[in-house]
Length: 173
Image (cartoon, rainbow, N blue to C red; front, top):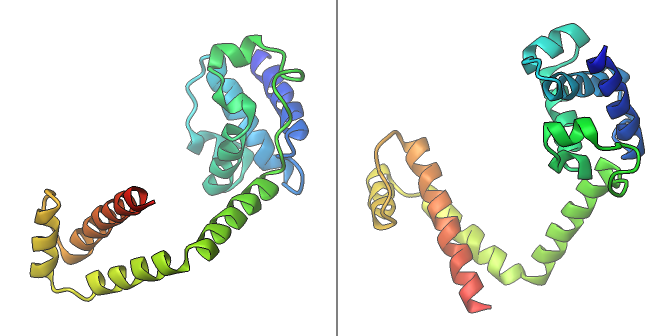
């Protein structure tokens, strides 16, 4: 009974935080049930909730991620159980609005620095054209393991190069 009441309170809060707008109720209910069950000490897996509520596991993860982006997402299980969910924090923006705002900010950054982005892309194309031996050498220059097949080595090298590139651009600005 406590789990269902907590789940209902969470659904009400999700409505306040715009998470339920444009979503099917089963996804919202699944996320609320999983959170409420864990708050009350019932160890349920995402797979169990997916089977009961009959939704895709990706849908459940998306709703949980959207919930974690709200002010309630930062609370511990004990705090969620004791705090008044209706009055806690400020209501969040709709998830699609927040996502679009982040995309706009990224596009704005790219427009402000087209030269740097073009140079980074040229560097990435150059790395992708290297042979495995050359990839391993460059990876060892970064102090990382060069073991593995080409896709693994390439992924590690690209990540190391991105980190180095970001460090260079931060020093330059």
